Amino acid sequence: MLRLLFILTLFYSCVPAQKESLTTGAATNPNAPSAWNKAGFPKQIYLSREFSDNEAAELTKAVVSWNTHGGFTFSSVSSTKVNDRSSVNNLNSLFDGEFGIYKAVNWHPNLPSTALAVTQIFGVRQNVGTASESIEIVEGDILINWTFPYAPTNPYGYDLFTVTLHEMGHFLGLGHITNYALQSVMYPSIGYSTFYLRPGSEDIRNIRSKYSIGVQALGARAPASSTVTAPITKEQAQNSPDTVKIILELHSDGTCKHYLNDQYLHQHHVEL
Ligand SMILES: [Zn+2]
Image 1 (cartoon, rainbow, N blue to C red):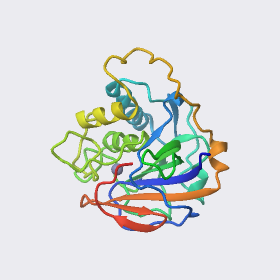
Image 2 (image 1 turned 60 degrees about the vertical axis):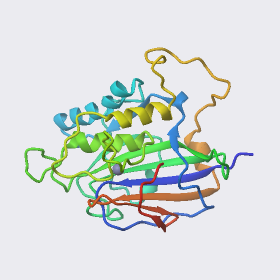
Image 3 (image 1 turned 90 degrees about the vertical axis):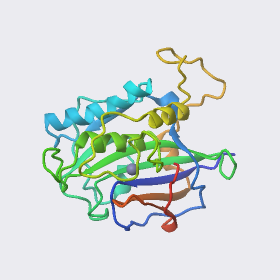
């Protein structure tokens, strides 16, 4: 029988070492790849109403860019704006079935103040303990730390499109790329002078590989496979007895610190 575990993943861009505690469970494989169930795409993403029209346009472009260059409609942005939920008391309550990009004008006290943005993901472990262990993502939210200047014309400003493009890579299950010889938006740090225009060739290769998007399949509906299963629902996931937490802390110096159940593991490239 399949054991189901929650996994809370926090991807930090440019943050110091700090973490919050969550219920812990059995050890998980830190190298298990994570992905949404492809049958559940496209995911609808909601923007908080605090974003201006121009900002919302930047966010939408970043979301759509993964579709355009990945050759698959992973997600779309709803025209319905939602209340900002980045200041909820308990960040775990963002596991609500609403996938949001939130404008955190007041940054959450449980998150490091130097985090530029956080992507929080819940997932369920599959094939636990086997070589093919993986994580099926069931929830994802992006919190943009608006105490930073998101103003690309400001010499110390950050580019909202660039940051969101990176965080959307995490939302879709991509980890970091630490080989700077590869073309990627998933390097573990983003500086104020960084501008990405679209996912890099390495990102495209990875996202297509993760979701089995072949050249031949582009624009065509892939035949149903006997292994296709329905996506795990939020309720199914929330009824799982074992909970673990994975945190990736991405520092401005380029290191990526990885915590599992609040235990420090290592600070090298972590593929999730
Ligand atoms: Zn990152």
